[in-house]
Length: 107
Image 1 (cartoon, rainbow, N blue to C red):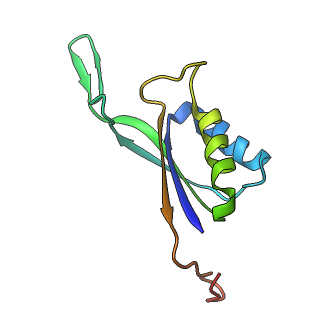
Image 2 (spheres, rainbow, N blue to C red):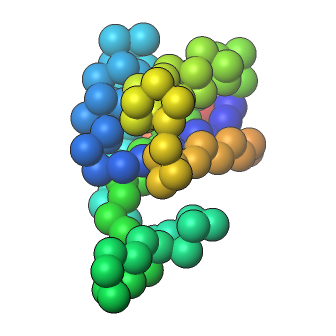
């Protein structure tokens, strides 16, 4: 299994969640976050915004579904035809084990 963590623009978050749902992946955890990427924030006039609002979306999927899920996220999160700085990132990590809290079952 894999954990897919996507950091996306807040205005694209619902688009990504809907696209994942439509693709058959309804299980998503959404967390509001703030931060900056390589662009080091945003300067508007004399004001520098070094922590920009984003949404962190987390899903755990089968390894065999990796490309479909990542491509779904990329397509839904991109702004415009070419995309823009600040559209976000997708991180993929292995998941060793999963346990259901209510039953204690593994898997």
